[in-house]
Each structure stands twice: as C-alpha cells, then as structure tokens.
Image (cartoon, rainbow, N blue to C red; front, side, top):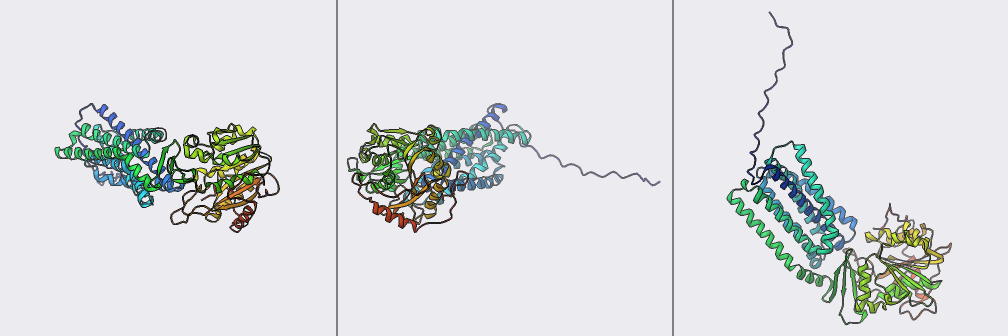
Length: 546
C-alpha cells in the first residue's frame, strides 16, 4: 500500500555548540572581577577622551581654524576606531595579552602626543601631519579596546552578548563624560597640555596593566607575564622621564618658537600668554603673543591702535566702550582725547587684563590706563554682555578690538547679530570702529565684515593702515602656510545714519605718530580697490568667514 501522506521535511542535525572558553581563574569572585573590568573600561574611556580633546585643543592652537582641525581629528579618529575594531579580531585568542599591549601602546602614544605635536610645530614649523598620524594611531588603539574587553568579561562569566555590550558601553560612555569634563576644568588649567597628557598616559598604563597582570594573571604564561611587566615598566619609565623633563622641554621649544627672550609664559583658563623682550627694556621691545599668535608688537602697535581708535573719536566721545583690548592699548588711545568721561573695557580673559596691570613693560606701554579712575573693566564674553547689562546703556563710541574674524572663536563677534547688539548700544550719532583683517591678503573676509555691518543697518567707511613690520602678523592670526604675512591692517568705521561716517582726525588730537586725515583718505581709496562685491553677511547660523 502506497503511503500518500505528506512526507516530513528532514531537518539537518543541529551542529554542536562551540565549546565555551573555560572560565578564567580569578583571584576574586566573578561578580567582583566583572566590576573591575567595567571600572577599567571607565578609566580607559576617560583617558581616551582626554587624548582626543588634547589633539583638538593643540590642533586649534598650533594650526588655527578650530572647525577644520576638529573635523580632521574626529573624522580620522572615528574611522580609525572602526579599523581598530576589525584588527582586534586577530587578538581574540589571547584577549588579556592583546589588551595589555594595546593599553601600553595607547598610554605611550597618547601621553607623548602633546609633546610630539608641540615639537613638530617648534622645530619643523608644521604639525598637521603629526596631528593626523596621532589621530589615526590613537583611534586604532581605542577602537580595539571594546572587542577585547568584551572577550575578557565573557571569560569571567558567560552572558548574552547584548547584556555584555550594554554594560561595557554604559561604563565607556560614563568614563567619556568624566574625561570630557576633567579636561577643561582640571587637566588643562591645573596640569597644562604637556604634563596633563603625560599623567593621563600614566593612569592609562597603570589601569590596563593592573587588570591583566593581576586579575587575569592566570591566563598568562610566565614568559608573557615577564614580557608585559617589562613593556609596562618601560612605558611608565618613558612617561615619567618625559614628565620630569616637561618644563625644560617646554622652555626650549618655546624659545624655538618665540626666540630667546621669553620673559612671561602663562596659561590662563582660556589661552596661553607669552611676552618676549628684556625685562628692563623699553616698551617698544615688547611682543605679546596669545595662543602662539603675535597680538602686540611694541615696535608698530601704535599704527594699529591709532588707526583703530582716532577716526571714531571725531564726534561725541564722552562714554566709550572697548570690546576686547584687554591689553589696555586701545583704551590708552581713547584717553588721549579730552572730554572722555569713562572707558569700559570688556574682555573675556581676566589673565590678559591682569598682565596689562602688573607687567612693568606692558603697563608702561599702555600708559597704566587701568590706574585711571575713568577706566572700568568687565571680564565677560562681549556678546553676552551686550545682550545683558549693556542693553540699557548707550555709548558715544564703540571700539571693537578683537582678533581677526578668520579665527573661529571670534566669528560670532563679527556676525550680523553681534553688530545689531552693538548698534543698539550706540547713542544717537555714535560710531563703531571694527578691526576687520587685511583687505589685501584676505579681501573676502574684510569685505564680508563690511557687508555684515551694512546688513545690521549701519553705514560704513572701510579703510586700512600700513607700516606693519615685515614678517609679523600683528593682531591678525598667524598666516597660513605659504602665505606672506599681511603688511597692513584693515578697519571699518560704521555709524547709525544714512551716510557713511567721514574719515578724518580731529585737529586737537594730541600728536599722533602715524595718522593724518590725508593718510586716512588715501588708505580708504587703496582699500576700495580690493572690494569684493555681492558678498552675503555673516550670521550665527551661516558664518561666512574662512
């Protein structure tokens, strides 16, 4: 009889499950061992984020253009982390050994990264290749951590992959939060860039070595144990020696960058301040650098500050506001005019103001303006201050003595919104003077400032001042690689009214060394030849400076 029933589908016999790796022989209970692994994840994540932020800070400081450097570091590092995760597959058969070697390499590279970047900048003049290389290598090592830690935590107690990944990433993200907060509030202001990176590397090396050499020592042969001890001892010795020599290295590298007469080198919470020139020398011998960029040269600063301030002082000038200018030099020029009742200086960094008060050469250069009872100081962000207390104040003259608009942190202070706030703070008939970069070297940037002021409802009169010392960048940022340093400063004088303010110097102005009405008008005609028409204004959502 034929069996007409539907035949049952033959199911292949299931493959036997892969043999689980035997549990590690731990010196503690599995629960405690698991917590120790997660604590190591926390520490390593904090150290990894400190390395990343160190590269970002140094890239912006040494190269400039923080948006570009942030994009380069983050994109290269994230790509490298993916590569590191793939490469970690080759180390899964020996996860304890692989993790110990990766942490030793990460501690060495991350700890020495700041010193290496500063060295390439000081002696080679270019640190961008080193920045990319360190971002790539550190990213590869960071990316290899989690797969190996996943293997180690499964050696303690088998659990579902989803739960293990959730635990690891939770510890990783919390560690990254702590590292991200520690960098600006503890590592950078207390330890500085070089020592901070070296000590972070030391913590990283100790955490990785302790986990493997103690908790997972049962997974190591005597030969591997001796080798890992030797590797980590060598890493700690290198980092310790570099920490001891960090101050000497920084002094030698600083001399290579600034020359042999570095008199003051100070790291505030916002930037590095460096003054060069002899301690008892004349004021004209002083050079002031902020974050590696020459901000003031005693030899030619009078050309810049006279051109910035005096054209705006031809009308009413009883109440004057200086935005930036914590060095006191713009306020010095303001106070040369009779009839000035008050000068308010708004500068973000109290360290600059403190230096201008206390340094004997700089205070002599600025005429000790901070001892004048007419001078008041506000240490606050200019944008925030104009939105707050200044909303009810009116000034006859506003002087915007800020870094070049191409420096990314200054971009919002060259926006249409910012100029709208400044215009609101002007008294009827008031004038606003703006430092706008070099019209010859960066015409698009300069004329974007002009277009932005006009978009804010102000009438403008662009002009420039020449005579800058060859080879110096003055108040502008350091020139890009391959660019010649600009040899003039560009300014825009703006007013609330339908007509552009008249460019002239009052006859009663106390003897100016480099500025006359005729030179101003000649400079305005030369500046007009560089005009770039049709540029849109720069706003907070759409910054136009490059």
